[in-house]
Image (cartoon, rainbow, N blue to C red; front, top):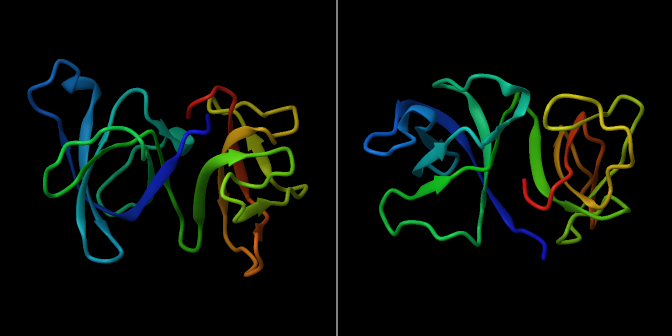
Length: 165
């Protein structure tokens, strides 16, 4: 079964520790202001993959991915447990999905085209030495065609070799 991810994009407006849980020292929450003016809370912990293992700070523009099939509390503002988060530079886009052997995502809307400058890595930062298709991939790219499927040449791909990111 293919895991379904949804994303939130925005700017981190605050970072604070989680209170009242046994894993509080290993978890933190962030307030994210989305592009449409919404405020959401995101939770990251020791199992969250952070692209480049860089500390996240107030003012960072990020894309955060969560399992859209996982239960979530019915509260306002919404709260999401983040599985993967990427701090992005201006003009960058992040996509997390299952990509088949042809590097086409599960919805058939995005196809990746590798170039000699595409860095293909494992989550631990080591180079991935195989063909990345048939895996869950985090792709970072700057532009995509307007065709269907859209085609993008990623700057970087992170290959998650296990069934879940």
